[in-house]
Image 1 (spheres, rainbow, N blue to C red):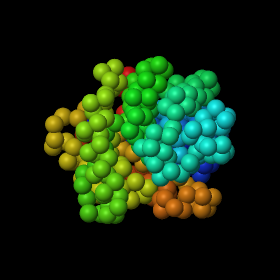
Image 2: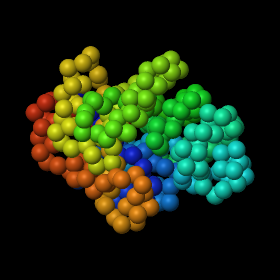
Image 3: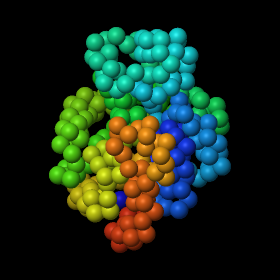
Length: 282
């Protein structure tokens, strides 16, 4: 089995940027995805250039953060506000068909092109809070991936069910898994490469070494899965990130500690797990 340790939210805050770089330099992380409209996006772009071995993806965003395009160009999404709407408001607007899909495509293209124009190659694409898999949005995501020749797109949710997750998170996980199986898989494009993703259920510092290894052992017992991505959210545990995103109830430092855990590396070696990145699999 080939395994990728991936850090989401590069560019969201400086504390998250520092955690991702530390996990890359000192730990097991090989891949990240950048939020082009994040408050620390420019710092993330600079860090990406200084660390060319860090595999770079784009973390498509459509809620809470700042758009790349002027808000007047995407008024059906922002309603004139300087930021994207909260996720719940966005969901309601999507289901009510109040959002212009051409504006979504334009904004997501701008997010991708901001990174590419900085001379940073993009090997993979995913979405903030799995927004790219929302109804009507996944075909837009695939179109952009084809346009920019991005070979990998996150389209699975393969966590091992566990009672260690909260009840609400478990319900969200089950719904997302069903949605992917019924709708997303049907729309999948043959020129986009598949891989298995784990980490939704225990996101934000809730994934420990024991649960991670149980997931790996479970995946190895199923049908052969050549490439598995573990989604984590490392950060240094700074007060700014903790305050701004307190509603997430994340513990970014725990994910950083997990990625720099020498005992985890030894356990992976004993299982014959090969660590890789999306770029190495091209």
